[in-house]
Image (cartoon, rainbow, N blue to C red; front, side, top):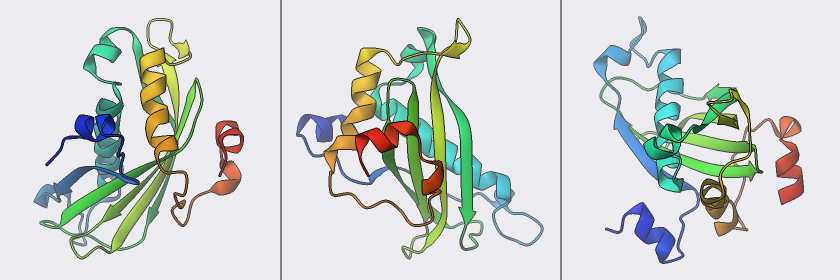
Length: 173
C-alpha cells in the first residue's frame, strides 16, 4: 500500500483524507459506558496531528518556531461509541490562506456509521514572536494541496457555513 507521500507524488490525493484510525480505549468510557465528551476532541486532535505531519507541519517545523493553533472548534455528537470500537476518521480542507486553516473531520465506526463531526479554524503562529504569522512557503503549499486536489468535493453535513472564514469565501465553495 502506498504511503501518504507516495500518493502526493503520484498526484492522487484522496478526498476526504483518511490518515488516522484508532480503537476506543476502555478508559475513554464515561459513567454511561460511552465515549466521554472530551475523548471526541482528543481523537479529532490526533486526526489533525496526522494531517499536519502529512503536509509538513511536523516536529522540525515546530522546532523552527512555527505551528498551527486551534482558534475555534465545533463538535457534533451524532451517535454513541463505546470501548473497543474501531474509529476511522476523515479530514477535509475547507479553506486555507496564509494565516488560517479551516478543516472538517468526520468520525465513523466499523459499520460506516457517522458518529461525530468537528469543524475547526486554526491559525498559523510564529511561536517565538507569539503571534499569528503567514505559514512558511513549503507548509503553505502542503496545506493547499488537499484543498485543490478534489474540486468536486462535497462539504460534510452539519457545518457552521455562516461562520466560514474569509479564506473559504475567496477560495470557493
